[in-house]
Amino acid sequence: MSVSTARPKVSVIIPTYNRSGMIRLMLDQLLRQTLPVDEFEVVIADDGSSDDTEQVVRSYADRLNIGYYFQEDEGFRVAKVRNGAARLASAPLLLMIDAGAIPGPDLLRRHLASHEEQPGRAVVGYAWGYDPVADPIPGLAEALAELPPEQAVEKFRDDPSFRDTRHEQFEQDGFDLARTPLAWRLFYTLNCSVSAEDFWAVGGLNEEYVQWGTEDQEFGLRLERHGLTMYLDQEAWVVEWPHERDFTSQWPLYLENVDMFHRQFPEPAVEMGRTLAHQDRYWHWRDLWLEYEDWTERARGLDVSGQLAEAAGRFGKDTRIAVFGCGGELPAGLNAAAVVDFDRELLDRAAAGGADGGPAAFHAIGLRTLLPEQSVDVVLITSRLAGLWPSWGEVILDEARRIGASAEVLDPAMGGE
Image (cartoon, rainbow, N blue to C red; front, side, top):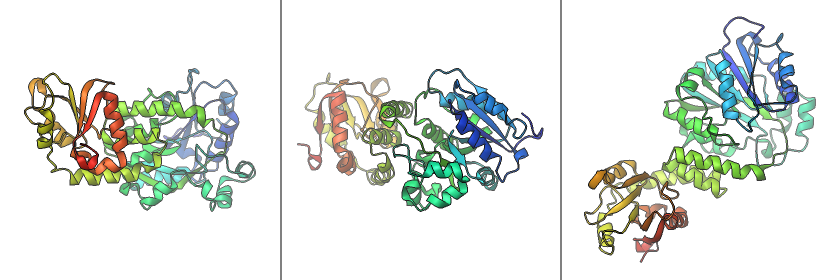
């Protein structure tokens, strides 16, 4: 480190791989920050570059407090390299931006101010031009090459395709993440900040994620459960440098990460997100989650023990039965091997009875469980899923048929016999 011996207020962590030219552009913009240069440091997190990235970084040592963390190239390891850079960081606040996220002149000052205003936040910044599935915006690269980023933003800001891909999601809740269901869905390490203390309190980024995508939402979920609130600062912005993406090849790898996220957090929120990702309906998550929350409240008193008792009489004692929508009470005659319910409290109550501690219990809607394929003989689907059936009935039936030799819908109104 150079320039100043005082402890910086913000550490900017930038992961990169063979993008030395882009790193130079980003460092030039960091020299233009309204936050004085002696109040922040930069740590470049190099995921195994073979170009002149290190030489470029060292060339700024007389103008920036700058550090360099390198790990060998073992493929995409962005979570690991960010963690390594965070260990070198000395500031109490960590600001993470992607390589190619050109910082606006107030980026650091805005992130710092948001944390000073209210500690205990995870701050989400805005990303102009960020849409990983869209083609580059015509003329944007040329504008960024000729103009400072704030002028490029003024030139393109009225173009809807220039908006952050999350813009409509932000807008639905008045750009207030405190009102946003599952706000961690919108926590992208493209542009975000969190205190170093909180970063390490949750263990940093999960280094098991070794392909593109999902590691930042998983990190955001852990931050929320640690007690942090998500806060959006639209004026803490970056501009994503336009570039072609091979999303066709990335998509299957992304879905593998989504599946891992669900295995780590097998619960309705992540189960729903996993299903929507596989259906390519990611942005429906918010509204379907609100529907789920509404039905969970309405169904709390819905007792299906009588429905299950009637069904139990049709099966022998050796029949392996799983119940989707078990509720809080299982009839005495039902020898369930596994029970599933979206209401955690009722599920725990149902699973507590029976020999050997009761059946295996899964906090889930039934869109995707952790039960192996064909692990039971029959899956009984109760009326407790009636309110979710219009949105999820086909998916629930598919999952029941995946894990069971047969499936029965017990409510005639849902299509049962």
